Length: 174
Image 1 (cartoon, rainbow, N blue to C red):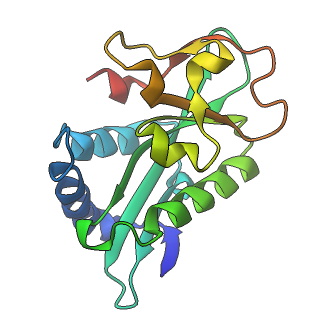
Image 2: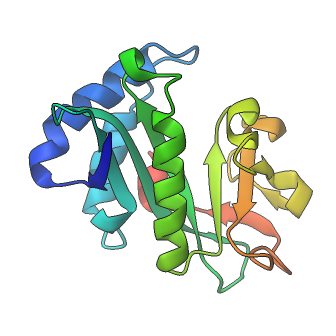
């Protein structure tokens, strides 16, 4: 498996992969492809923070995207992991783990202090993500279960003195 920065030639196949992956979840498809398209149009988007995992035949089997966020009035920025998707035929084979590791590495290089994710606590917990409430941080949406809204500092002081509500790019408001 190879993990590379997304290229425009990958967009259509990644769209299909994301739709298929989310369609088979408990919560179903909820506009994740449209979210990706909107994030790519935002001036803050960095292709370097969107990666694709490819199988040996160079077919996309997973994708992850990070976009900038803030917490409260802190000038220290972090990143939101959304979405992370793995082709259903390749799930439970370490693809998601490798994508997360690559994105965390790139987040550190780009100066991100922390990463937030809305996802399964059992899955993301194995990578060091903890409920945001443990850091006195809240999601901007009322209907998010506390256990599922997670944060991970990327440095020992990544969330030191930071508290409040997370601010996302406008694409997340749709």
